Image 1: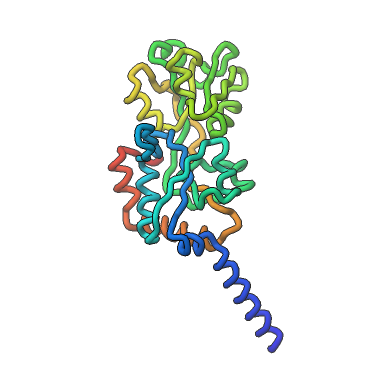
Image 2 (image 1 turned 180 degrees about the vertical axis):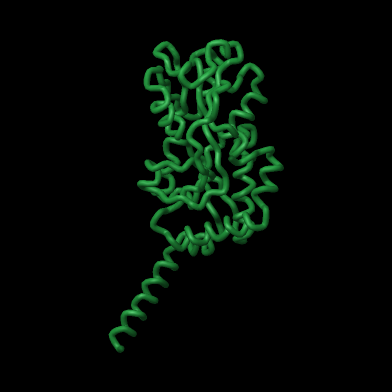
Length: 257
Protein backbone atom coordinates (compact mmCIF):
# COMPACT_ATOMS: atom_id res chain seq x y z
CA UNK A 1 0.00 0.00 0.00
CA UNK A 2 2.83 2.36 0.94
CA UNK A 3 4.61 1.69 -2.37
CA UNK A 4 1.42 2.40 -4.32
CA UNK A 5 1.05 5.70 -2.45
CA UNK A 6 4.63 6.69 -3.32
CA UNK A 7 3.99 5.88 -6.99
CA UNK A 8 0.79 7.95 -6.97
CA UNK A 9 2.53 10.92 -5.34
CA UNK A 10 5.34 10.66 -7.88
CA UNK A 11 2.77 10.67 -10.69
CA UNK A 12 1.17 13.81 -9.27
CA UNK A 13 4.55 15.49 -9.00
CA UNK A 14 5.41 14.63 -12.58
CA UNK A 15 2.00 15.86 -13.73
CA UNK A 16 2.54 19.13 -11.92
CA UNK A 17 5.94 19.49 -13.56
CA UNK A 18 4.42 18.82 -16.99
CA UNK A 19 1.74 21.45 -16.36
CA UNK A 20 4.37 23.99 -15.26
CA UNK A 21 6.34 23.41 -18.44
CA UNK A 22 3.35 23.54 -20.76
CA UNK A 23 2.95 26.28 -23.34
CA UNK A 24 -0.36 26.99 -21.64
CA UNK A 25 1.41 28.01 -18.43
CA UNK A 26 4.06 29.93 -20.35
CA UNK A 27 1.36 31.88 -22.20
CA UNK A 28 -0.39 32.71 -18.95
CA UNK A 29 2.89 33.81 -17.35
CA UNK A 30 3.96 35.95 -20.32
CA UNK A 31 0.48 37.32 -21.01
CA UNK A 32 1.05 36.72 -24.73
CA UNK A 33 -0.21 34.15 -27.27
CA UNK A 34 2.16 33.81 -30.24
CA UNK A 35 0.52 32.68 -33.49
CA UNK A 36 2.46 31.95 -36.67
CA UNK A 37 0.71 32.98 -39.86
CA UNK A 38 1.66 33.30 -43.54
CA UNK A 39 -0.61 36.21 -44.41
CA UNK A 40 -0.98 35.00 -48.00
CA UNK A 41 -4.08 32.82 -47.86
CA UNK A 42 -7.26 34.65 -48.79
CA UNK A 43 -9.64 34.68 -46.92
CA UNK A 44 -8.01 32.80 -44.01
CA UNK A 45 -5.01 35.04 -43.31
CA UNK A 46 -4.16 38.15 -45.34
CA UNK A 47 -1.44 40.69 -44.61
CA UNK A 48 -1.80 44.33 -45.60
CA UNK A 49 1.76 45.40 -46.51
CA UNK A 50 0.91 49.08 -46.09
CA UNK A 51 0.56 48.73 -42.32
CA UNK A 52 1.60 45.10 -41.63
CA UNK A 53 -1.82 44.28 -40.20
CA UNK A 54 -3.62 40.97 -40.73
CA UNK A 55 -7.25 40.14 -41.45
CA UNK A 56 -9.12 36.96 -42.25
CA UNK A 57 -11.19 34.09 -40.92
CA UNK A 58 -8.27 32.57 -39.03
CA UNK A 59 -7.18 35.95 -37.70
CA UNK A 60 -10.64 36.42 -36.20
CA UNK A 61 -10.44 32.96 -34.62
CA UNK A 62 -7.04 33.43 -32.93
CA UNK A 63 -8.03 36.94 -31.85
CA UNK A 64 -11.02 35.41 -30.06
CA UNK A 65 -8.83 32.68 -28.55
CA UNK A 66 -6.43 35.26 -27.09
CA UNK A 67 -9.35 37.29 -25.78
CA UNK A 68 -10.87 34.25 -24.07
CA UNK A 69 -7.48 33.42 -22.53
CA UNK A 70 -7.12 37.00 -21.30
CA UNK A 71 -3.78 37.51 -23.06
CA UNK A 72 -2.34 39.65 -25.84
CA UNK A 73 -2.18 38.26 -29.38
CA UNK A 74 1.16 38.39 -31.18
CA UNK A 75 1.06 37.43 -34.87
CA UNK A 76 4.40 36.02 -35.99
CA UNK A 77 5.15 36.13 -39.75
CA UNK A 78 6.10 32.78 -41.29
CA UNK A 79 5.88 31.04 -44.66
CA UNK A 80 4.67 27.65 -45.81
CA UNK A 81 8.08 26.03 -46.12
CA UNK A 82 8.95 26.82 -42.50
CA UNK A 83 5.55 26.84 -40.80
CA UNK A 84 6.20 23.47 -39.12
CA UNK A 85 9.75 24.43 -38.12
CA UNK A 86 8.34 27.48 -36.34
CA UNK A 87 6.40 25.17 -34.01
CA UNK A 88 9.30 22.82 -33.29
CA UNK A 89 11.68 25.76 -32.73
CA UNK A 90 9.21 27.43 -30.32
CA UNK A 91 8.88 30.56 -32.46
CA UNK A 92 5.13 30.51 -31.86
CA UNK A 93 2.62 28.56 -29.77
CA UNK A 94 0.25 27.60 -32.60
CA UNK A 95 -0.12 28.39 -36.28
CA UNK A 96 -3.19 29.60 -38.07
CA UNK A 97 -4.88 26.79 -39.95
CA UNK A 98 -2.92 24.39 -42.14
CA UNK A 99 -4.01 21.31 -44.05
CA UNK A 100 -3.55 18.04 -42.23
CA UNK A 101 -0.78 15.96 -43.75
CA UNK A 102 1.10 12.84 -42.60
CA UNK A 103 4.44 14.52 -43.33
CA UNK A 104 3.74 17.49 -41.08
CA UNK A 105 2.30 15.23 -38.39
CA UNK A 106 5.64 13.40 -38.11
CA UNK A 107 7.16 16.36 -36.28
CA UNK A 108 4.28 18.61 -35.19
CA UNK A 109 0.90 18.04 -33.61
CA UNK A 110 -2.49 19.27 -34.77
CA UNK A 111 -5.47 20.64 -32.94
CA UNK A 112 -8.93 19.30 -33.66
CA UNK A 113 -10.25 20.50 -36.99
CA UNK A 114 -12.98 23.13 -37.35
CA UNK A 115 -13.04 23.46 -41.14
CA UNK A 116 -12.72 21.16 -44.17
CA UNK A 117 -11.80 22.05 -47.73
CA UNK A 118 -10.76 20.37 -50.99
CA UNK A 119 -8.41 21.08 -53.89
CA UNK A 120 -9.42 22.51 -57.27
CA UNK A 121 -7.40 23.62 -60.32
CA UNK A 122 -7.43 27.13 -61.80
CA UNK A 123 -6.33 28.53 -65.12
CA UNK A 124 -6.94 31.63 -67.24
CA UNK A 125 -10.46 31.87 -68.62
CA UNK A 126 -9.09 31.85 -72.14
CA UNK A 127 -7.61 28.38 -71.45
CA UNK A 128 -10.89 26.74 -70.45
CA UNK A 129 -11.25 25.30 -73.95
CA UNK A 130 -8.07 23.30 -73.28
CA UNK A 131 -8.60 22.37 -69.64
CA UNK A 132 -11.85 20.74 -68.62
CA UNK A 133 -10.65 17.88 -66.42
CA UNK A 134 -7.80 16.78 -64.17
CA UNK A 135 -6.44 14.62 -67.01
CA UNK A 136 -6.27 17.62 -69.35
CA UNK A 137 -3.77 19.21 -66.98
CA UNK A 138 -1.69 16.06 -66.56
CA UNK A 139 0.17 16.51 -69.85
CA UNK A 140 3.90 16.91 -70.50
CA UNK A 141 3.43 20.28 -72.20
CA UNK A 142 1.51 21.78 -69.26
CA UNK A 143 3.23 23.84 -66.54
CA UNK A 144 1.56 23.67 -63.12
CA UNK A 145 2.63 26.30 -60.59
CA UNK A 146 2.63 25.55 -56.85
CA UNK A 147 3.77 27.46 -53.78
CA UNK A 148 6.83 25.90 -52.14
CA UNK A 149 6.14 24.10 -48.86
CA UNK A 150 2.37 23.87 -49.25
CA UNK A 151 0.21 20.77 -49.23
CA UNK A 152 -0.70 21.66 -52.81
CA UNK A 153 2.94 21.26 -53.84
CA UNK A 154 2.85 17.63 -52.72
CA UNK A 155 -0.59 17.10 -54.24
CA UNK A 156 0.45 18.46 -57.63
CA UNK A 157 3.31 15.97 -57.88
CA UNK A 158 0.80 13.22 -57.21
CA UNK A 159 -2.02 14.52 -59.43
CA UNK A 160 0.13 15.51 -62.39
CA UNK A 161 3.10 13.13 -62.78
CA UNK A 162 3.33 13.95 -66.49
CA UNK A 163 3.14 17.74 -66.16
CA UNK A 164 5.94 20.17 -65.40
CA UNK A 165 5.71 21.26 -61.74
CA UNK A 166 7.00 24.77 -61.05
CA UNK A 167 7.52 25.54 -57.35
CA UNK A 168 7.34 29.23 -56.40
CA UNK A 169 8.94 30.51 -53.21
CA UNK A 170 7.08 32.86 -50.85
CA UNK A 171 6.31 35.77 -50.87
CA UNK A 172 5.54 35.10 -54.53
CA UNK A 173 2.49 32.92 -55.17
CA UNK A 174 1.57 30.21 -57.66
CA UNK A 175 -1.50 31.99 -59.06
CA UNK A 176 0.69 34.96 -60.00
CA UNK A 177 2.59 32.68 -62.38
CA UNK A 178 -0.68 31.79 -64.10
CA UNK A 179 -1.72 35.44 -64.33
CA UNK A 180 1.66 36.31 -65.86
CA UNK A 181 1.44 33.48 -68.40
CA UNK A 182 4.47 31.67 -66.98
CA UNK A 183 2.32 28.69 -65.95
CA UNK A 184 -0.79 27.11 -67.42
CA UNK A 185 -2.56 26.17 -64.20
CA UNK A 186 -2.25 25.95 -60.45
CA UNK A 187 -4.16 24.23 -57.67
CA UNK A 188 -5.48 25.57 -54.40
CA UNK A 189 -8.29 25.10 -51.92
CA UNK A 190 -11.85 25.64 -53.05
CA UNK A 191 -11.97 28.41 -50.43
CA UNK A 192 -9.10 30.42 -51.87
CA UNK A 193 -10.21 29.63 -55.43
CA UNK A 194 -13.52 31.38 -54.84
CA UNK A 195 -11.77 34.54 -53.69
CA UNK A 196 -9.20 34.45 -56.48
CA UNK A 197 -11.73 34.32 -59.32
CA UNK A 198 -13.60 37.19 -57.70
CA UNK A 199 -10.43 39.26 -57.32
CA UNK A 200 -8.96 38.38 -60.72
CA UNK A 201 -11.73 38.07 -63.36
CA UNK A 202 -9.26 36.61 -65.86
CA UNK A 203 -8.90 33.49 -63.68
CA UNK A 204 -11.36 30.59 -63.68
CA UNK A 205 -11.81 27.32 -61.85
CA UNK A 206 -11.37 24.38 -64.21
CA UNK A 207 -14.78 22.61 -64.35
CA UNK A 208 -13.57 19.24 -63.07
CA UNK A 209 -16.18 16.65 -62.08
CA UNK A 210 -15.24 16.95 -58.41
CA UNK A 211 -12.51 18.46 -56.20
CA UNK A 212 -9.70 16.27 -54.95
CA UNK A 213 -8.32 15.48 -51.50
CA UNK A 214 -11.01 16.65 -49.05
CA UNK A 215 -8.86 17.76 -46.13
CA UNK A 216 -9.55 19.06 -42.62
CA UNK A 217 -7.82 22.26 -41.50
CA UNK A 218 -6.33 22.58 -38.04
CA UNK A 219 -3.73 24.50 -36.06
CA UNK A 220 -0.18 23.18 -35.84
CA UNK A 221 0.87 22.74 -32.24
CA UNK A 222 3.64 21.13 -30.17
CA UNK A 223 2.92 17.39 -30.38
CA UNK A 224 4.57 16.73 -26.99
CA UNK A 225 2.50 19.23 -25.00
CA UNK A 226 -0.70 17.38 -24.17
CA UNK A 227 -1.81 20.00 -21.65
CA UNK A 228 -1.75 22.72 -24.31
CA UNK A 229 -3.34 20.43 -26.91
CA UNK A 230 -6.16 19.56 -24.49
CA UNK A 231 -6.86 23.20 -23.74
CA UNK A 232 -7.01 24.14 -27.44
CA UNK A 233 -9.26 21.20 -28.30
CA UNK A 234 -11.64 21.98 -25.43
CA UNK A 235 -11.83 25.59 -26.64
CA UNK A 236 -12.59 24.51 -30.22
CA UNK A 237 -15.27 22.07 -29.02
CA UNK A 238 -16.92 24.77 -26.92
CA UNK A 239 -16.90 27.29 -29.77
CA UNK A 240 -18.39 24.75 -32.17
CA UNK A 241 -21.17 23.99 -29.71
CA UNK A 242 -21.91 27.71 -29.39
CA UNK A 243 -22.10 28.19 -33.17
CA UNK A 244 -19.10 30.51 -33.25
CA UNK A 245 -17.43 28.98 -36.31
CA UNK A 246 -20.69 28.90 -38.25
CA UNK A 247 -21.24 32.60 -37.58
CA UNK A 248 -17.71 33.38 -38.68
CA UNK A 249 -18.13 31.37 -41.89
CA UNK A 250 -21.19 33.45 -42.70
CA UNK A 251 -19.20 36.64 -42.08
CA UNK A 252 -16.48 35.56 -44.52
CA UNK A 253 -18.89 33.89 -46.95
CA UNK A 254 -17.29 30.48 -46.44
CA UNK A 255 -18.73 27.00 -46.54
CA UNK A 256 -17.02 23.98 -45.04
CA UNK A 257 -17.28 20.69 -46.93
